[in-house]
Each structure stands twice: as structure tokens, then as C-alpha cells.
Image (cartoon, rainbow, N blue to C red; front, side, top):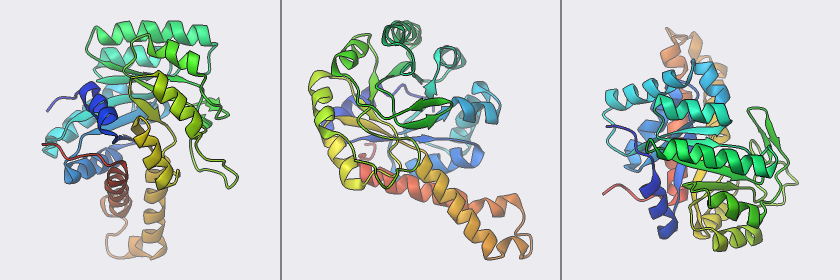
Length: 287
């Protein structure tokens, strides 16, 4: 089964007031865990990789081949979108050429006019090859591959201008943050989300989905968010399960040190997180 670009999936999600999960992969275990969770729930899934994770794994071609081959080995039948997360201009162009089915060009750290011009260029390159495009306006709080955002609210007029370039989905800052949320976090700005949803027809993307309370995620989805990014939550689940395994001394029992055994609890924890989040998002099963 080949990758899909996700346009029909996310447009249906916006119309149906549900969302589809976008889960970051970091290695083979992550890839298998995400695919397993989506297959168990029989729902479409977006597997995405950041620039840093792609470098860690080798390069974008390695990531594409890994996901492709695992889909074949695991007999995955649900639709899978392979996506570049928070890519700069060069990374987005490379992933289009390599064979990703979707890319995010994140120009939110650039002057707006430059972000607009480069987004338009990426849209033209991507659409010529049937690849979907996500753009960003109003940076997301926290840090992602060296791009640091204070979590400001997206300007509605700027968002409309970016949407007019033909992007397929749009990430807008509404007070969300990458990584763990601090105790003094004020929550999502639903007033700004309402303005954006009324002004823009394309599916909206909620970055920093890990750690946002369930009721806020569900409300955001009802208001137009169709793609929710989850990474930190899977990382924490993996780390906690792995720590529990080691602190219980299981790595010292028999061949418990075997990486296949050592990594198994954490990998299952990722799958459990994926299936739980799919339920949160209300993603319907594939018919």
C-alpha cells in the first residue's frame, strides 16, 4: 500500500468535526508502534518526522524507506500519510523529491512576506507532484528543531493570506506549546480559533497536542481543528515504561538485556498512547 497525501482525509475531518492524529517517528520502534496502533483502531494515520529526527535516523530517504517497508512487513491496510514536520525551505523541497506524500514548510520564524513567498513556492512544487502542504502562521510556543516560538496568537489576516497560497492545511498559533505545558499555561485561545475557523476553509492544525487537556482538544476539533500533532506524550510514555522495566531489574533476568526485550515495554506504551489519542480525536474507522 502506498502513501496518500491526506487531502480527502483531512477535508472530511473538518466537515465531520473530528481529527486525525499526526504522530512523530524517531526510529524503527516508533514507526512500528504508530502503525500498529492505527491498524488496531482501523483508522488513517499521519506519520511525521522532524528535521532533527530524520538526521538522527540517517536522512529523509531512510525514513521513507523504513515506513514503506514496515507497512509492507506489518500488512498495514489503513491509509498512511508520510509527512515532514516543521521543515525549513530546503527540507521541504528535499522531501517532495524523495517521495513524502505531505510536507510542512514552517516559515513562521521568517518575516511574514518571506514566509508567504516561500510557502507559495513550496505549494507549487509540491502540488505538481501530488504532495500536500502544511504551512504555519503565528509561531507555536516552545522549541522545535531550533525554531523557538513564544506561542503568540496567529494574525487572522496573515492566516488568510497564507491560506490563499493554496496550502492544504494550516497550523495557526492559538496559545499552544511544543513539549510539556507549564503550570501557569493559560490554555488555548478559543476566541482566536473561532476567528480563524470562520475566515479559513482549509483544515486547521493543532501543534503541541501532547499535554493539552482532553476537553480543550475536543472543543478545538469541534471548531475546525482537523489534525492534531502528538510527540512528547509518546516520548514520555516510552521513557516511563522503559524506566519501569529497568528499575524492576527485568534487564538482569535471563536475556532481559536483549534490546528487543528492553525496548518492548516502551514500544507498547507508544502504541497504547496512539490508540488512546485516536479515541480522543474521534477518528472514525476506515469503511
